[in-house]
Length: 391
Image (cartoon, rainbow, N blue to C red; front, side, top):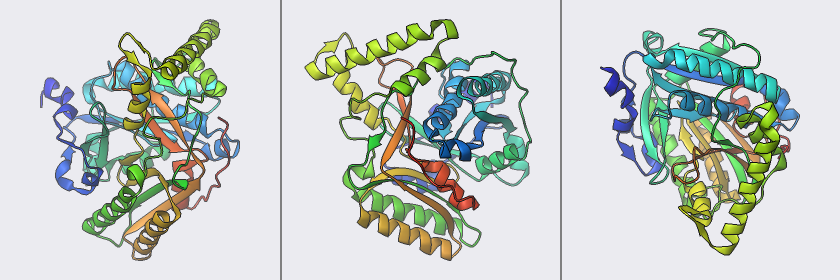
């Protein structure tokens, strides 16, 4: 496969629009030969959660996507946000660029957020040598944004290898900063409307066939789809116009150097004030429509995904949650699946907005008091407890 077809691989993956399609193996395509996975996660996320810093953890995870995509020119490459980490798949021709971006993000996370980001680059060939694969599907969250879904067991294996210290990346020099243009953390936590915000992770067990696990995924998705708006945690008209000062400061640290951060804070606050005014008055400013932007924020959110397992942060009532949990528990008892489920009162949103004038801005959703990290801990046996997040 030549470099041009490599670069355009994800654009050629067929798009599906009903999320139930994540369970359809026909929607997935194997990554091309000689691709790599650039991945990262937070070391010590347990303590960060206990300190109420899960929004910082989310910001660090999303920074990996921002840094890598900005470094490679924001081309159409598959990625997934995992709450306390992220993964981007790329042609091997971009490996050197990806390594530099990962190392820069690691340095920024350490020096500006006070967290430790573990990073790795794993060749696809190494994954296939283990009898595993990385297959990718393309789900359209809206007419303007698609998200990658991953299957085949390869991403999970790569993450395990990273945690074992394999496939590491050389650290960047002190003071190195990634290009985090577009990374945004402005919104306040989003309160549940239907009942509770529930973060769910379900991964295959040892005793079930692939067909049995796919059937389980289909049933869970179908139950959540019965809920208002498919259990979407972000209101149809977008999140409430509440903005976090801590979030503004995080964004300023991410997108400006030390000497210019006060200017960046002022610019962000001015943008927010203008957005609120335009939204309240229903006035457009050139091509920017504040009310449409808020609706796009909702539609463009990744509250459901598949990454070698089902991950959802949904807004559900007691009845739907009881039915979902009963299915998960039965599947776990039979060895079909292992699962983690964490309940909280609100959701978090971290954003990648290259420009608000374009409608392809992306919004990463997680639970506000530990979300996916707490759910994952139930699978691994760490059993973290959720705490209230610092906005």
